[in-house]
Image 1: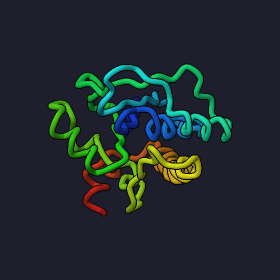
Image 2: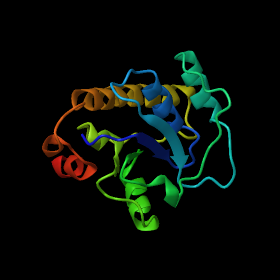
Image 3: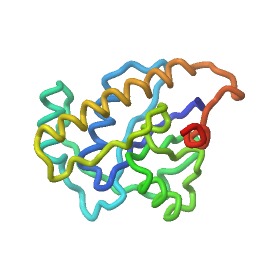
Length: 169
């Protein structure tokens, strides 16, 4: 995998899946420093974390104090940034809307780690639905961390990109 200095997790409103993914990722040690951020595709004004997502994260020991949602902007895209979305529809929207979005650096999180299913939005569901979303994210993020750490120091020829992951699925 290419070396990235920044990972941005993106979901619809940046109040549930992206913050959960970022919180989980921050719990695991990486072999090289990576800034972990979250963004939303539609953030009309800064909002706190969804209450059910917050409850699930707190119950799993992840600090979410002071979180507010942030809109994805054109400036978020560069060659050193990996943008990970939860669904194919989000990937397509980003590639259509943002000129600087590069298909090699923007991909569906689950596809990058070799999974077929997308991370389903639990919005409006029960607390249990949020818990299941968290567990799926945790399993997926662990694979992402392993992918990052295994590829530490790999040559450029062995680096994978989002295009490679999408071609494999």
